[in-house]
Image (tube, rainbow, N blue to C red; front, side, top):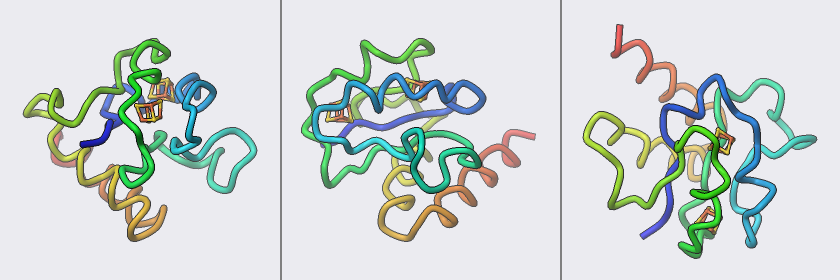
Length: 103
Ligand code: SF4
Ligand code: SF4
């Protein structure tokens, strides 16, 4: 399992989660490539150790365990994974598609 960042991060993106993650698997953190332009932050599922620290840190409850992701945010499981497996552009594209699908 891994943790996932979901829709409430969009427009919030305060990076508190990246500050507390003990394995530095949340990106883009401040100063990193794409930090200014990213729509949201993303958790690398291959690095996450399920420590739960990001849940407490997030002011808008955007971070959660994969098993706790509600149906309307199901797409974010893949969005977080694609961001790391296929690159930032592919992840961002999926976020835009998600938003477009919401109308
Ligand atoms: S659960 Fe822990 S390891 Fe995983 S993203 Fe959150 S803070 Fe990082
Ligand atoms: S703490 Fe929450 S809102 Fe802030 S960047 Fe992390 S997931 Fe997004």
